[in-house]
Image 1 (cartoon, rainbow, N blue to C red):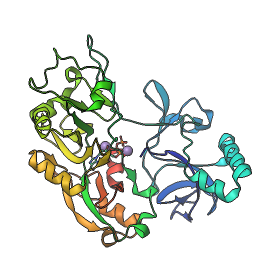
Image 2 (cartoon, rainbow, N blue to C red):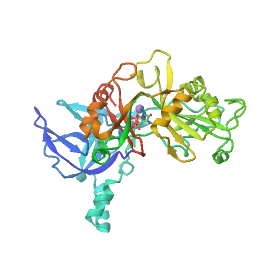
Image 3 (cartoon, rainbow, N blue to C red):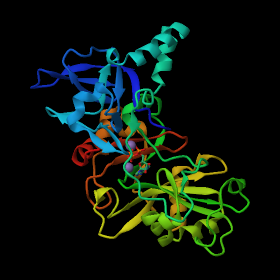
Length: 378
Ligand code: ATP
Ligand code: MN
Ligand code: MN
């Protein structure tokens, strides 16, 4: 599920902010955004740029943000973060369609072709990020290319990536899934890590370039293929830093080869040198905390309980499981789930949030602690 960072939506409510006469608080679905007074009225169409959007600095329409520009991936631009204005949490940027005639044009075309009602529905599912040159900000990944080695491969296409949708974008789930049971885990603030194993008889192996069998004897007796990936890269063993080190420390090549299943185990690489170590690990400590298992043959995730069991069987750590609950019993609206996301991580520091996974189905989403966002500036 790839995130739609730039969407056209209807404004929900627009309310005054105590003590402020030039700004107001607008809502779009489960998000709250500070806007200028008079800029929006309820039910207006607007373009919503979510947090983590990287806005292109060379588009003059973002010139008003110039003091906050940074350079990322050799691009000058603006990273949208959670902000607090006059005591109000504001997430994202809301702009009128007047400023983006290229988007208004697309909508007009759809309305002419399909009618207003159908167009409304189609527009809801669209992302305008590409059209407006907006990128998803990703923190820099560790170096993965090594001189003298083949280039690292991109993340394998036969494994699902580890993204989670934010609850603010799914306000309808409380009504639709109230009676469904979800596993609640703590969201750890490390780096996404996936290890996979393909059996010798897996047809996928034939489509891949060989690893370097001389330089990378991961397990001498291994016949299948074992890989370690960061969020976007299938890492070379020689350039895999903490990812490969933690995989080896946990004997993952051996364990997966003994298990002999076409599985990808996904988890969070956490430790003292990852993501500024907001989790507060001891210097030098790094560990892999499992949160899901992808069945490569079936192209689907294992149930949460089966993931816990497999992690235990393989003697791997699992992200903290807070419990299994009916959604309706823990929250009936976005706000309540966000409040629940506040809490402590495994070392007693403020946690990033929680992840909820449906037990009998594929739905999962995250609720990020707003106080964490404010403190650590994401
Ligand atoms: P970024 O802000 O850089 O996009 P993120 O962590 O917010 O990073 P998301 O896709 O928004 O990325 O959230 C999903 C990520 O959360 C997963 O890729 C995974 O690495 C991480 N994660 C941490 N703890 C858990 C957990 N308990 N369950 C599922 N995913 C988790
Ligand atoms: Mn994210
Ligand atoms: Mn993260």
